[in-house]
Length: 135
Image (cartoon, rainbow, N blue to C red):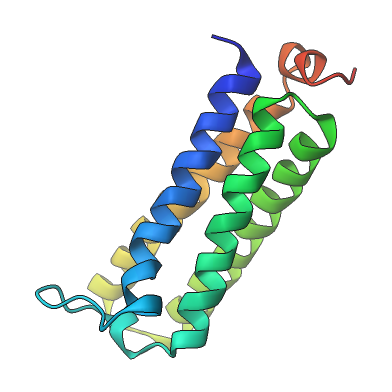
């Protein structure tokens, strides 16, 4: 399997995941049996996240086709997401002095940063960059 195909499918799966998580809140009454903090978010936030999921699906097509600009855009997006996650987790950790909550936030931080950092490292490999038409 080519790198562009694998990365395109990965980004498409992330886009579908965003749509599945936020779609019920955007276009319906929300979840009925599962209650979480997202229930309190305004509908506009869910619509924006649905738009983000749709943009990921669109980007996945160009990644699948091996476009270098899409690879660079994904590297920038992953980097930005990682920075925002670290800043958000640090802000929550500073405002909360309860040890179990800080441990939970640390786990969430590792979980949210590991994937994008790994993807950036994969996207920067010479053989991947070569397949996308750069290098």
